[in-house]
Image (cartoon, rainbow, N blue to C red; front, side, top):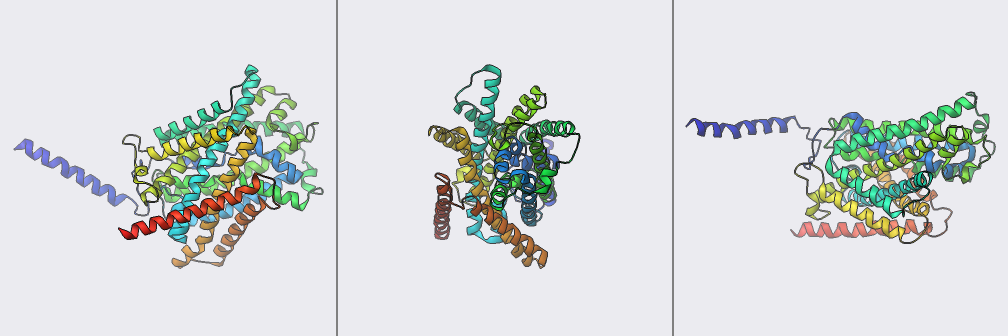
Length: 477
């Protein structure tokens, strides 16, 4: 009798615990079976910081911005920061009210309806796949430089690309907390190296102000506009923390803060490094606009060749952290869409021990490997291939940015909280994202860049057709 009573008591205790847990759970946080409430505010922030990969701008993108905007590069990053912060404010209208793994897909559904929401998710999956490809390809460029410096030889580019993709997928599969901690320390390391370099540049010039960068006499309107487009593109990925709605400890607080402060931090970092690097190149015979490894060259010019190796290593780990952030975010958006039956039910699977979206991670990892190898088989330069991948990823994220920004006032109006400032912030954000999209291919560039907007629009039309199919299927059941 005692044994039977003991067995009867166990389920009752467990039931009481489960009821208590459910009562404590915020109904605004949608559960899809992922590990709950394990990421600290800093680890949540690391997801968005890694998504931006701030070390990538001075390491690779700044030379392109300078080639267009010249000594107004710092101003281009300042304006870009303001534009992206406005977008972050609109996203946070939703992020502060609900949380799930769906990120902008879920926000767009709430504010703009099922069709636009599905298209945003459809677009984001493409963005994260192409983003992983771009970051893995860019990491392979710096890995190749490191191999040449150390061993005077290098492996085929496909090897480091596949290693980067596979390792990102494996870590994402194992543990989201491990992923967050790794991303955090990788970014801290790479940002610290660049900060040291900026300090050395300031010390060399006696901390004098570079008045030529502030005068803006030689800045052309068209060049500045095109440079501004590239500067805005450097922020792509800041929304990545939005996919941690179930795993963040206090998602309705931590995710909005991560999205907002990642843009502020990265923007300040971009402005300072742009100013410092341009100042540093003013005393060298090498043109910054024609330089593929500006930080390594500056390190050698300053008399610290060992720092050149650290800048290359910093770029590698930053691009790898961005790969990891994109795999994590993309898999969770895909999981949320599968839960809504836009993807096969197979993709709703969660690993029993790791509590990670294993089928979605596997799909994204394999897709990235196949796409990267296919692009490398074209025998074009890896720099060009990474630019192609990054361009498509950018288009695919600008679209949900604009949709969510445009939907924010409507969500606020339904709550009776809409004010004129919300309309202005929304309009400025939508206009900025639209200008970035149009400015990236107007005037019409040479092939293949002139085809990318068309490919993206065709991809969206395919998504709309799939949505109609799913809608008819659901109505027939």
